[in-house]
Image (cartoon, rainbow, N blue to C red; front, top):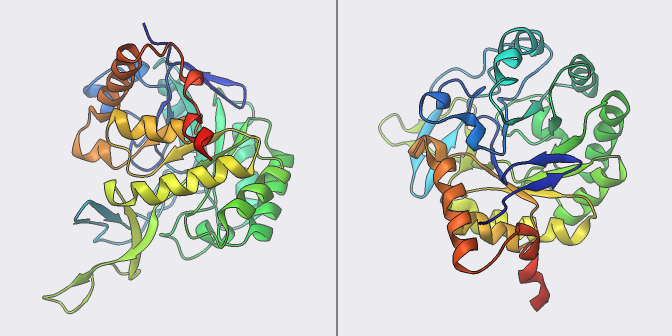
Length: 304
């Protein structure tokens, strides 16, 4: 029987399937479909030092092969998360990743300091959200800026620190090297791709921000390329995400060198998607006589 366990920066996940931040809330709704213990972990909805209302509607629209969203980091704030959501999550039998966002480095640091003495297993530093006007992706484009904010957060953070990168980064390998040098324990990529949609009847952009984040199967080959580049650039674990919807998709990322994967938009199309993907990965492994994911991790790179 296939052993799906993976280790990311010292945190052991029972399988490589992690719910991507912003697509799974804090897990309450999905727990109605299946036990969250079936997952490797949950990257919770992005949290900030204070409550945020997010962007005004419209926030979501479909596009061929995916979806666009401009939610804008709506969340109840870190104190509410610690007091109301974390106690429940801690009893669900899965690893908890706190996705942290902010307007400035000081905001990030203040938030992670509040998380230091909680049961959160890992912090995911979000320097790549395309749907906020301040902070977010501002640190995710230039390697020097990213390295500086990661360095400050690393000094404040007692938890394993994973940095979520933007596909809009000027140079993916250089960005990865910069955050590794600044103290990141792992990297996750990619976040959504900046995109646009036009309402033909209103003759104006669908979203008030004009641009929004594209996710779904359409971005998967590009995300896979970026994960390949990231794995080749650093010596820390890389968690791949972007358009993963099947077990075969997940296995592609692992064969490219990813330690684990995150699943996002697929959860909207099928609330049980991650449970199905985990089963499909295990079935493929059993069929091909693969006992552990370590046996195939990065195997595609042998052709280089």
